[in-house]
Length: 204
Image (cartoon, rainbow, N blue to C red; front, side):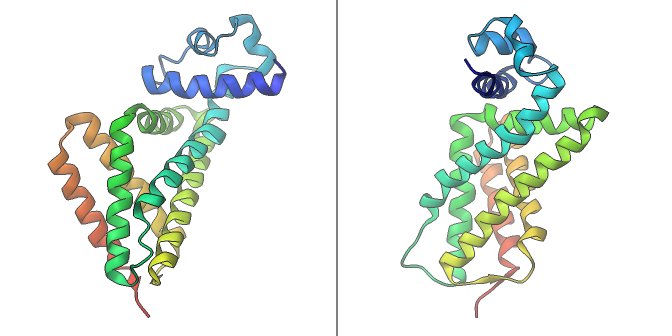
């Protein structure tokens, strides 16, 4: 394997191991075993475990959330619908689609939240953690722009101001599911988030 291929394999393996065992449980030995490569080869790709965690936050997490968005958007597409009601239905479908994907593989979002908390508590990773969330806000902003365009409406506020609300909502849904698996509570969370978002929608 080339160094680039080895780096990619280790990044993907680390993300999956964090999803299954948490950040603390993501040892270099366990990550290398998941990537099917000898432990001795780790330092050909990364200087340290910290460097690998940085790479996961910089590339794997935003890419995975982008793939989730691409999977959800077709569910929410309503070519016949325009206006506020279509926007409301799209927002509802987006969040319900996210919840469906979450239930199918909760470790992915759990890994994202775990990495954010871990980075906050480790000075050498704090800036990377903030940048990871900045990229997640950008992904959410794209979703908001696409939804508004499809529905023929616009946002009263810049999507850069609204996108953190979407990530906060997905984190809340994730933590509620991981803690209680309460479909009723999550349906209410989605309903309230959609209602709040709709207060920023303008139909010309």
